[in-house]
Length: 368
Image (tube, rainbow, N blue to C red):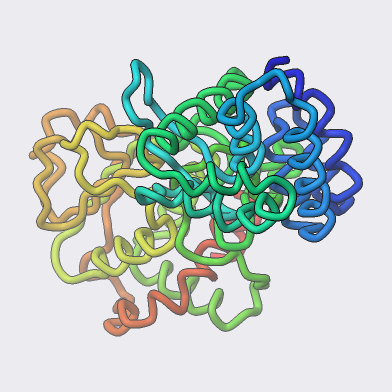
């Protein structure tokens, strides 16, 4: 019996363990596989999930008399790892790169993480129901290597890869509060649970907190924005450009201005909000981030690869300026003096800035 046959009815098993809102979200999109259902069940009903898992392991060990213990243990390992581990690569006998899902995104798992997880989660149970299996689990070296290669290979083969979202350029924007999706009808962002099949490898740096236009943090950010741009139209365009990053539809933009006028503060604010979505070294060959930023004083020789350039250089120096959808002039010598201490408040005001970016475009223009 194949592993796919073993797992065919898991969704219906996990559904009663999942809270109603998360279950509706899971059922709304066919991309969500058994992995996401298992993760949600494990998080929402840990005791029920653990009881089911232990019973499944006991039944699997007792019912597979025609298979070797190592073959059965591969099935057991696969089931234990399924909600929160996956591999990339590993073909041709090469050891794969292992990732672990942490509730928001997939992070690189140090060597030995998957093995330790397996032993901690089921070691005691195996010792009670099948001592031989417990002893097998303690073996290291080639057995554990083959266990990982075999189990992970089977896990990956049953995943609906054609429905998986691209890791960085499409899909929701991962925050500490959940994943943001744009509702095209209302032009509002909706926070939904982050799930393994969202396949996110990057994340933002702040929570999406509940603010209003009367919140002191929002007022301070809006006032500051009005100080550093020439007019409200330019401000609104800048915000719309960054809002496009949340929806994976950024336009390249070049922002320039001479003197000390808060360019570095804006760069720091953007980096704080978008965190690992920002790719710094565009020469590394990793062009799959949502946002690339070049700040003042950086080498712009590769400027065609950047989404945003904030610079004090003349736009005439950019031979491919036509590649940018917008080239906006930063304020210099305007009637307002930007807050010289704003840079120090960036960590505290970044959540308010993210909230502003999630507001409908038509709404923002009236508030500037």
